[in-house]
Length: 207
Image (cartoon, rainbow, N blue to C red):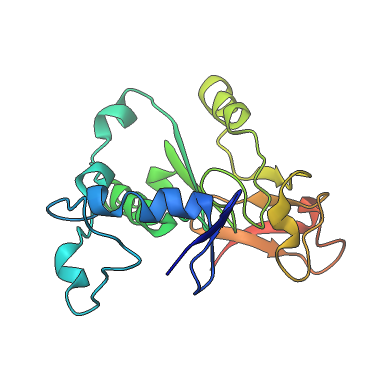
């Protein structure tokens, strides 16, 4: 099947694939996600669902991380992890699983939250983009924690006017939208009054 290519998009007959999805998923598959690597493998042509699982690395070595970070914790280190739930590269679930493993080693979320917190950004793609509030100040949050002892209970995130993905959903997301990013496993809960585009009208709650 011939491909129709234009800036930012590739049409393979079955639908449009964004360039970022291609670069993060299709191109790396034969090298990073297969055991052993198979440079001749064409993900859109050679997939056999009967044997696919046998050829894929469930957790590739480059994604593996040691959840034992007691040394970092004991030296007074502070850590903010964040991941977009719409990431088309490394899956946000992998980061959540890693954080859960850290929690398990430290006994509870409360104990872990004293030195490490995870913020999942709803709808955000790989580091930015997606129908999301993808702009937030991670540096200010970690500075307040490290230098002032104030742990981030919420981080205010805003939509980005130049983000074309805001209009890719229905209803479209206003460029003036703000939301609180909440430390996992809490989430942003609408208080029931006021604009849904204003972070002030949301509270971080845990199920």
